[in-house]
Amino acid sequence: MTDLAAITDRLGLRLSPDALSALLTHATKTKLSPLQIVEAIADAERREREARNLARRQKNATVGSVKALDRFDWNHPRGIDRDLYEQLHGSLDFVRRGENVLLRGQAGVGKTTLAQHLALRALEQGMTVLFATLSSVLADLMRQESIPATERRMRRYVNADLLVLDELGYVPCDARSADLLFHIVSRRHEKRSIVVTTNLAYKQWTTVFRDATCLGALIDRFAQHCHRLDIDADSWRNTDAEKLARPKKPAPRATR
Image (cartoon, rainbow, N blue to C red; front, side, top):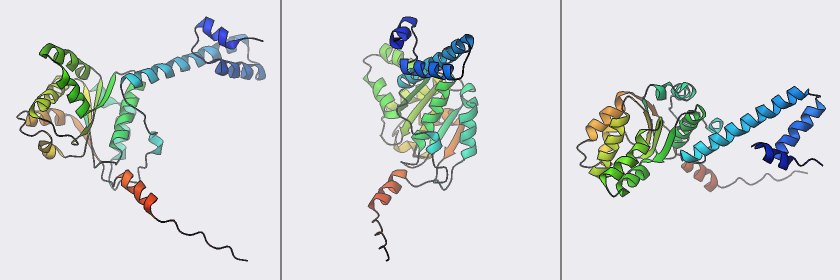
């Protein structure tokens, strides 16, 4: 009996033995020519390698687990510019032009999910991506013990084609944190894109970055070339909790 596992191992194939077996079975049933079989194996191997590469890059980008975009209920929000989002997601021209995106709405309305799918789309197109909460980015930079170390770490957040900063507005930041964010935004300005998710309008950012003298300049740079997507909706989590708490109606009695 042919050991497909040994064959795939010797050839350095990423394709699993089960997948190769299924392909060969299909080839036998459909009477593919030897050349067609080789082409089918090569195509399956290419797709497997691309999938593994994407999974590795998604892990390195720290995008995390993502709810399928086709499960996003566009009818749930009272207001959302779906056409704008689909244009941004479909073309990714905003990344190529170094423009920004602001996803704004209260907690639990899907901002992170939509941001994750912008990140995934960019990864699929071969772009470099980094996805992180704003608080984790600032904490990472604040941990560096010297200016040169901070500068080296800063490159991680400056050089990616697309940087997604999730959850601006949930953790207060001091003036030094604001200065670090200002440096990220300034160095990426008109060169590389930033996506920010937040529950706050620009004028409310002062509640997060208290006493930050750079805040006005930071907002000006970020907002200059920015697509704003406001999501007017109730929290999904509250809706789900209400459904669970709602008493179930008793089943109707069977009639004889």
